[in-house]
Length: 337
Image (tube, rainbow, N blue to C red; front, side, top):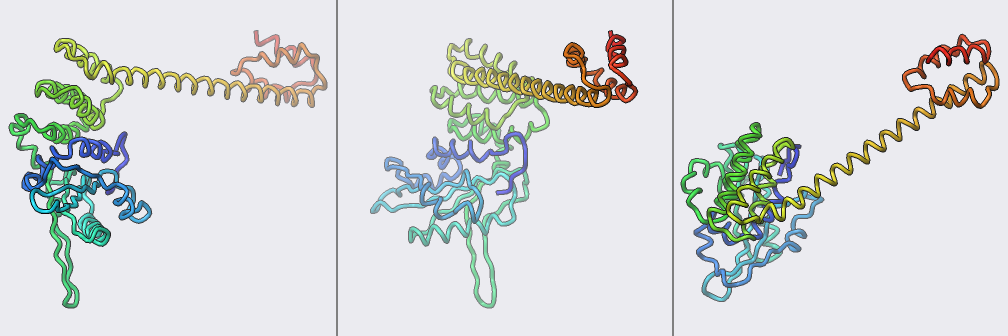
């Protein structure tokens, strides 16, 4: 997946976490026909180790949100389905080919084809990959996979608002992150609205905290809006007598602010020390130049040179070329006040 540099471009990471936390809800929201065929009473297994072997970083690059999951189909002899999820944040020309490559590797490893699914999170309405194929000298291939486009949910606001599935909030969060890239104030308002929605839906504390982390990651606020956001959220939680987020997340936020302040102070102190080292080196150089020009100087004169303000050192460096004796230096020092 191509990445663009921004303040927190690694949007795959929160997607990976939320998919793992609420995998059944994700399947029921995006791929209901498949979800209906899965026996959710059986264990769900995320095949991270196997998938890492199949898609090494050296060949394809790091894949944060790609998931290989083993579930069981309803009825029969516990038929295993290998479900490949793709969260694609930006259009990528080789995306269909990569999905096909994954299919071949998974099939070769497990001797069973996966169900290939893609969740397309990009902002290009025309980009809708769902197949890969070729024909050459009588040989041909046609591979189809299922994909959903988050942009399509933008016109389903009423359905999203009324849905009890946690992924309705996930989708709304992602869409609002795209819509408010250039409008920090609107982003703050939507962030508060989406978090309030978690309480209004009656989710328990763990759901609220998990979904807050996803929302907080995608809807990044500038520093000047963070304080007012936390204050409004604190007031809202106090009114509902449910301080779920501010009692936990604000502690970490405050700690982060303190750590940032400490790092800033350390940086300022180091900058001050560097400036002092540079200043001392400059004064030491001037003492050596003056000694070569007018001869050895008494210690009290050297002490006076070492107290010359930084803005006068350059003037002293220029004036020393005109000095003939210690008297000229002393006169110059006396005239500096």
